[in-house]
Length: 430
Image (cartoon, rainbow, N blue to C red; front, side, top):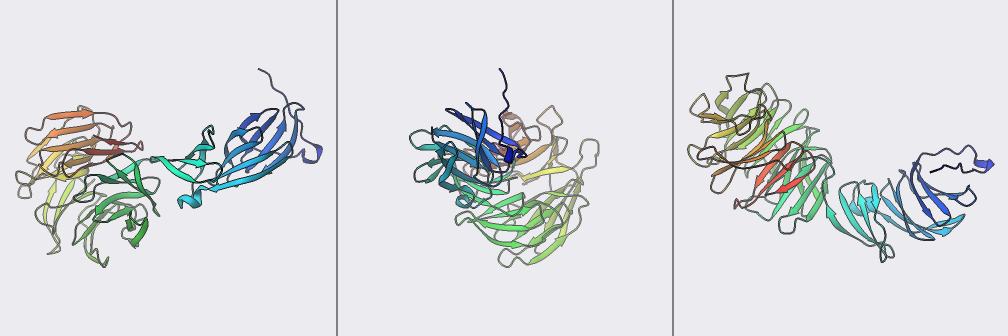
């Protein structure tokens, strides 16, 4: 290998650029810069020929189409077709993906064009197919581009599910062909989510509660400053929206008016999970990193039960919660230390405590199967999934597919499938 210095003309000898991509076509080199220019050099004469300002946001990749045509993908979300020769180049076609997708995106990669088509990688996790003559597009594949924090099914629906991810997006997915059906950008990173009828209610990092329609891909309403700081948990039914925040407060809202009708300040640390009782829609449970579980009657606006872990050594706080459908419908909590506890409202101490793994990874998400209640799915902070029999607490399945923390689990209503999502941006259907 050897290197050669190319000469710049004297009039622009002070030109300095950061180079972000290069392709060679015949006797010319085309170099993309961080300022959005394509610089053209003659390889034969080792000299600069011209520069063309193509986009803002920097040029992220270039691809040859023919001897006189170059595809240029920009950090501003534009794809431009550059045509010409030597010192004469112009933009003949243009696609603005940010405008098309209604989102600020970057185009990160371009496949080798074939038969007038090219695949374009988008920073939001999409792959789109572009016709280079008409610039018409279609979405080929979709995925999250950052960690996924929440997953859920609408009540009674088993063929579609919703995810909320750290790239501030809600996505609706089909379980029939695993394709994305809808994609909505939201105004803040989602920390918690509940799917209710035809809308998705999100507790956000900025302390707002927002409701979105995935069908119409728009914001329906929002509750401003519902909490101070991130909303770690949210639960919804026809009568109430219940939210729990990093501020250790549980608040109750009326869905139709968004009026706050209750507030509970019994916890001393972040409220990590909320659950509405299976039998009584006015009873809610909350758990917290302070190692306590509170039971509230929303009709009477009062706390009716208090449970606390007596051991600091094996419980550094609760981070997940679900409820049995059989027995006495005990509440089940998962702790930071990887311990499951079953609590009965009438008893101060847990009815049982057990662990299903030998490591110390916390149980970041737990969900009892909704139809029969025979199983509980457990997701750990180490990315391991367990399915456990509720009858004898035996592990009937476990796997470690995720490379990051399993953040949320959701069963289909018929219990035939289970969806897990994780901080590594992966979705697994079991």
